[in-house]
Amino acid sequence: MTDWRREFAEEARAEQPDLARLCLLVGAVADPSVGQADLDAAEIELDRLAGLVPYGTRDADAWVAALSELLGRREGFQGGPADYQRLESSLLHEVLRRRRGLPILLSVVWMEVARRAGAHVYGLGLPGHFVVGFGDPGELRLADPFAGGRAMTGTDAELLVAGATGEALDPSMLRPASPTSIVLRILNNIRVWATGRPERADVALWAVDLSLTLPSHPARLRYERAELLVQRGDFLTGAAEMEAYATVMDAVEPSAAEAIRQRAKAARARLN
Image (cartoon, rainbow, N blue to C red):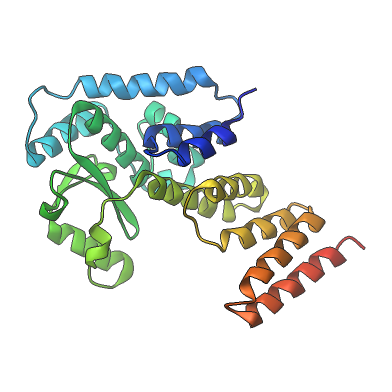
């Protein structure tokens, strides 16, 4: 049986991680029925879609128009409020099958199709909404795949950020996202989905485990993993991981470290 988690960790640490493969491996971990043939079929579908992009597409505006026509109108890739309630909306192989997904997964489809067709394309992780850009990032030639590929201006991006955060657009928000940062955001979405469903703590746990294999991740994920283990009844392992995290926290937040040790003590007490 293929160890998809190991393959994910190896791809994440590659010199140039492959975004599509990382996303497909997330799906393989999520769904035990997924096999190598399913991952191959997803890659073939991305290649097929790229082959439908009009030959000779050149400037950024032309790429936005061509991808909007192909992926948004003809192929029907888009999203809506209901898609936030489905785990499948965060799994690339399912998004390719259903033509529905979260903004970041639909953006991955756009990026992978455009890249295969020869575009200079990048992802932009704006607060609360992921979009794609073409050409020079400074020119802000953007599209919203969640809206079927609606073209966006810099003003549109500013309004989107203001609506999500109540604050002005910061230049740091316009940096193209790396493959591993995109995947970390996808895994964060999966964790948020599972958090609202206590019966799916198993999903939250594997999402945290995959996040921890990425080269860069929030340190607090280790504490979150410990809490999930306790939630699932593995009190000893969860308590031990809390204590290890508390040791790390001693140097920066001693009071928080002590509170975590008390949580570990309470977890161990649940064995009695």
